[in-house]
Image (cartoon, rainbow, N blue to C red; front, side, top):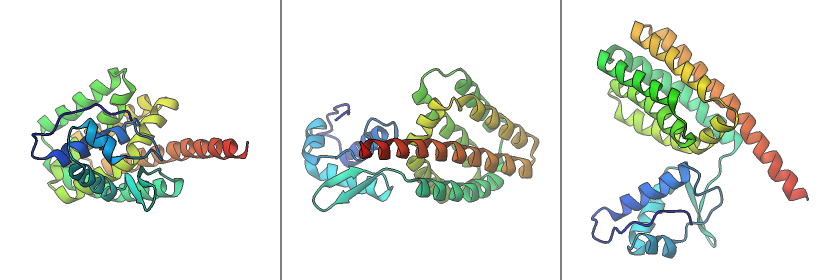
Length: 229
């Protein structure tokens, strides 16, 4: 298993730390679809008992990243084209609502922070940073909405898509296009043009949806071809 061992034997929130490490490994693709999460092995890696590991796996299951099977145990859950489309449809509604609520509260400092994220993304060479910076851009703008429940729900939706979006951005060279779209959204926010900001955000999400749909379709086609051999 590709995980960095951490000694959490004296940490109160051991389950939370195990959860964070596993979640990151899944999102970044170190743990792949169908990989088993063996509790004994994970407990040894973190120098803890199985109780925090079970807690972590339960939290991952609540976020839709892991599924427990009766005889197989917990495994990393894959994402179907239908599920991805549903999540993107959901994001178009929620992102638009949250952004419209956030825009009147955006300060010059917040706009500058979001613009710094765009600048960092434009010069990033590590593909693993693309997803982090993409998420940071959106969350930075949305925090001004003061809608913590909406933001938590959006974070869960992003978790389900993130590992696939990272791969799609790398393979399709969509990183520069995504960053350019971020700048257009930011310019609209800076002008205080809510309709333009929302329309650009929805178009941005739909573009990612089309690209990821094509990417997932190719993956599933390869799997079917391999199974037929």
